[in-house]
Image (cartoon, rainbow, N blue to C red):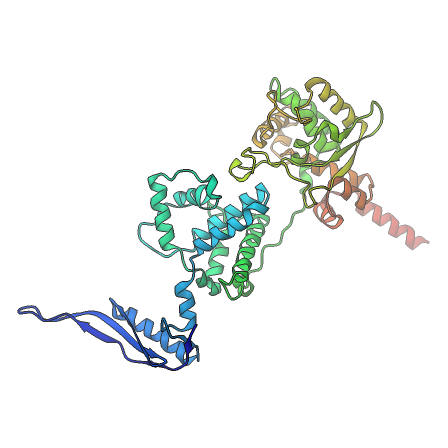
Length: 460
């Protein structure tokens, strides 16, 4: 690229139409003229304000000592903006780069974040499509691999054309104000209510990573979020002790599950039991196979957790099915987690295998046709079981409101029973620091124990 600092600028020139009999001449356009390294350059605009603004930009660049490109006549900053790809073009390339290496749930989160940001980083152009049309276009067509895109109907085709024309240049994000605008969108739900702190932090992390990638590939000079004074909301993450059931309540709920439905409830009892007695996550229980279980006729057994089967939209999975088989959360794919199974759980699992068998691949918890239970299906079973097992006041409370709360009850029980934190964390698949932070409010009686120990020390 040939550049020069030798720049000369003239005032804006008005261009008039040719006068005709009975029709005087009038100004029809405005031309900005300048030279770069002795080469004459010009650019014509339809309005005076446009020409004056362009001339002002050239003057500011020259005054700042910026080099000008001799071919285009533009200062390098303006040349970069003029040739920059749009945010939409960048976002598509970024999603394509991350997609092959991301899990299905991560792909879903990636798409949600990029959809919200991309619908925001647009010009105020006429004929803007409805928000729901833009979201549908971005989620189902723009931010999925080309091989998975559906045929575009006319409405979505028009929306795509509008979006491609209206998307802002990515270089506009060098202004932190625009990055702040995107953060404000991520901080609220579609209904305009504040998003949960964990949701916002997760989406902010995706957006920041995308901007970091833009710096890496040369689209941005620096990450604008580093200059935005926005403190993410504190992530509580602690378990509400009101959701934690005691062992008697847990057993009542497990019995109640068997009375829900003719087949589905009884098939799910052992899955819920794994969440309570072994502290498994729902996706871990869904992936449990008979070959992963040591179930002796008497005494404790062992469940070796090797795979999870999280549920997401099938457009995000490689198999085209709603459940995606993955390794354990926050661990390498080939790392497993042995969890001791108390005799009560061993008995329940043996009864389940005798009654329902297993899927072809050994999975324990499948429908009568061998399929996976959807999250909505077992949540509905659990909701009906609560009505049978709990009092009306308890049904209206947060007590065991979700199947996941059985896991919370399990870990809380271990800690209250005096199980050392490292052992409890290993069984739960947590880091010790995370576990103590999450379950700190669910450890009952610790204050009295601490007081007694201090009293004994003082007496000594």
